[in-house]
Length: 182
Image 1 (cartoon, rainbow, N blue to C red):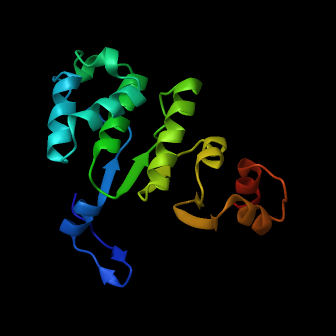
Image 2: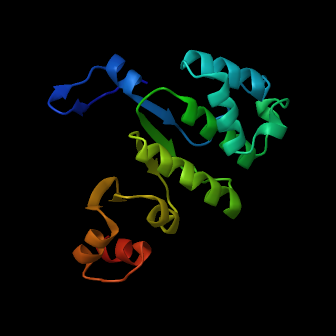
């Protein structure tokens, strides 16, 4: 889709669409790319496109527990398996900014707890990881900074303690803060 309004600014510089594509990788929720192809073919193609080594791809596959699924077609994967596949592709993408829509949707508790440290490690390594999610308890657990949206607008942003202060609710959960501010 072509943008219909707005600007993306990197520091003082306005970015064009080509620069944005080189900078941002978007993993939308609910997609099934290359449904007819086996997982291993897509991973091999993806790592080559993004200049990643076979060892890096193997590490990512192990981290998201896809090893046993490599021979299956993408369309045969369950929702959680497909999500782990997409997360592996995101982690192999070369862009410095990852935008992940509902990265935990379809994952069970154990899988969520395995994926969260991977995303945090990416951030510690210097990548910007932006997640959108409806599960505020998960967001509070994995995000350093939060932007609370209501009716399509940001109503508050900052660290959890800053949001608690804005809501005048010290010690409150993110869910309680959200309800107080919206």
